[in-house]
Length: 503
Ligand code: ATP
Image (cartoon, rainbow, N blue to C red; front, side, top):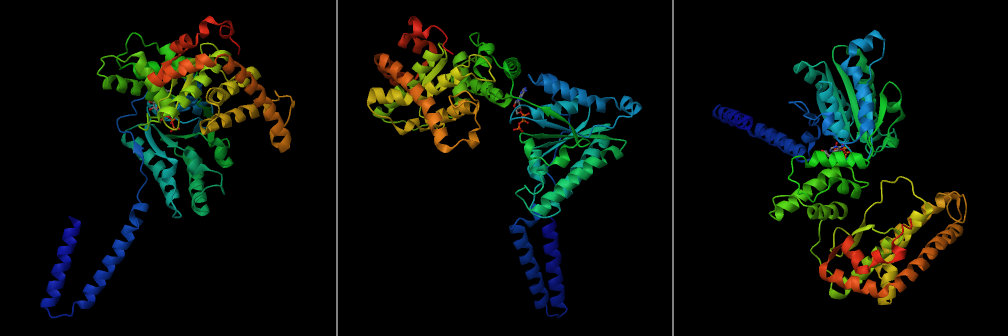
């Protein structure tokens, strides 16, 4: 509309000047030049680059409470303690306590840091405003600093408008904005100015007595943060938000399936046991994918098999259309059954699925059920895992006469596990520093561990060669077999050496 008005005024002006008998050429030329310069600037994104910060202001409250967050009990406890400072400012003043300015949530992606910040805003009845660290980063000096000022001002005005006494500013990926000076990838000057502005704003927080503002930052790389941000008086509390344990996973699964029709064969405890190492985001995706799988099958309820399929999808990625040829299929099946046999040998009942359906980067894979949540590992366990990794290649060698490139990734992982054994002082080299170890000594140490396991695995595969062949044939036909059926195929339940837990 504005453009049309301006164009009309300009045309009218030119017509008027022409009527009065003036030479309009210099005027038209100057206008054309200005128009050209404006368009060039716009096409280079000049105007967009200086656009205001894209903050996410939650107008109707965050709608998330602490009861919507599964697990994370210690993080919740620490956060709730810190939030008392906002909820009861009178008590804090009476005791002469300096108000809390910042809380840093540290943990892996998808563990619920954003949810915790939102729940903190609901709990304290605060205005909530959020932005990502990357939104403050620009190549033009001064823009980042201006955006930092802007978010603090918006938090104050937002709280005033909603007649709230406090506001919570949440900055995700704060490491991008608060990385140590001299480390940022953007222009040095711009990065310093942005970080300095953040420090200035945090220092100024206590001066604004009417509205209490709390900054919550989230990162999974606290080591990158500038020391000035971490000193007391800035981020006063550092709250660890870890991957959920068994009970945490169970609670998260319950939360994300409460609105879904689960069939009777679904045992959430079993799903929680199978998902060691999953974050809350993984578990949410798992429940969602299971519901999608059920919908695709036109099933009224979500069954156990839908969860099994979704587990594979969340771990390995989407199914691929490409299918290997007949010979390659057989080789992959022999490889996977090799892994599965060794896994059953070292930890009976440990295989939950074997498949040769290509997903993500894998042509086939086995999924093992974790025995129970474990955070430290014994030498026996690590050696057992190395043996499972070597099982695929050795099975190919014993049944097909040679190995293939399909085992390269297994070997890489086996070497990493062997290094872990050496690093933890559990090898014949004794207690050593991995990085100071001469190359050939390290090589010898690794060889000793890997060759020891290779020999054990070869003996087992040789002994059960016929069964491996039979199970691989079955896998080629069905493309996927469950742990129970695999154990019946291999007859492992009846064999003594597969009965006792070796790890
Ligand atoms: P990032 O570090 O990648 O920003 P984050 O730690 O902030 O991730 P969130 O954004 O809070 O993770 O979580 C992503 C999604 O995962 C949530 O919307 C929720 O569905 C689910 N989720 C994560 N943790 C939990 C939890 N503890 N309880 C319930 N749901 C969770």
